[in-house]
Length: 81
Image (cartoon, rainbow, N blue to C red; front, side, top):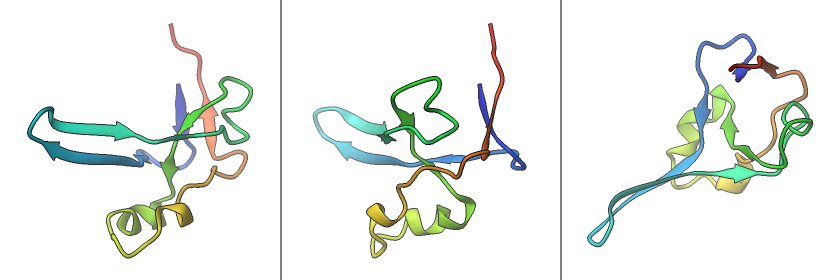
């Protein structure tokens, strides 16, 4: 389990849409892993920094400017199971 250090929650970037044939569809975006995830997996979800949450919902802000790995040491790792 990964936790964002110093924050009780984090936000995952995603895309939502309503379609007639599928209904509501939601996709969590992934990217190459940042330094905290790379030892465990070759992909990771896009975690948005707190100061980017509002920007993610603003269509005038480019998603490319917001999708980037977190700095090393941003996530703690705990084995479960």
